[in-house]
Amino acid sequence: MNFLQNEQFNLKPTVNNISIHKPRVLMLYGSLRETSFSRLTAEEAGRILTTMGAEVKFFNPKGLPLFDNNDSADHPKVIELRELVQWSEAQVWSSPEIHGNMSGVMKTQVDWIPLSMGAVRPTQGKVLAVMQVTGGSQSFNAINNMRILGRWMRMLTIPNQSSVAKAYNEFTEEGIMKASPYRERIVDVMEELMRFTYLTRDQSEFLLDRYSERLAGQPKLIAM
Figure 1 (cartoon, rainbow, N blue to C red):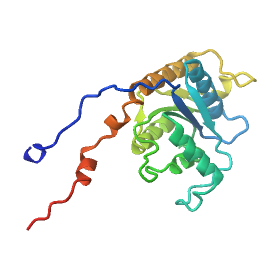
Figure 2 (cartoon, rainbow, N blue to C red):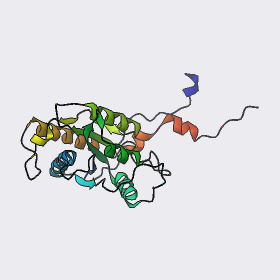
Figure 3 (spheres, rainbow, N blue to C red):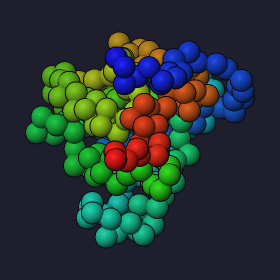
């Protein structure tokens, strides 16, 4: 590997400064219905995260325009979403499964999140948890596709996940999730999200340092 003989790889993390603020978690949900079970599931997860010590913020997708290749980038909802993404250290995506996939509302939100904003990469290296709800039997199509999206957005998607079947049976009239294995799984997922966030949030420079980008920043040698 002669081409790497002069390359210095930084492969061992060091901890100099440890953040003391609460982990910042953004919740995205994929439905505009008044009784949205993906929203109720996200709210339940938000309460769990708050109990665990996180600072939690929600984005309401109502009024967000369809993605139009940034023609509407100055729309207030687009600006709000992008500011929340930059603020976050971790995210939770909660979508209904519609026609075997995440909802259009969910996908539109992700479409409006750019891979880069100038020198800032708003999602790269941030932690992600995915959840879905269904009106029928348990399925994993939406969360599997959200995992693909999370990887494309260069996020650290945690191994655990939540899929709530027949979600209309799992909440009280007040919108609180009933005691069940589904609720226990959401606690597991949020616990794992918090652990990964604590592990990675102070290591962003280390985790995002790439050989190809260092190489691109070096002066080019001109063959004579």
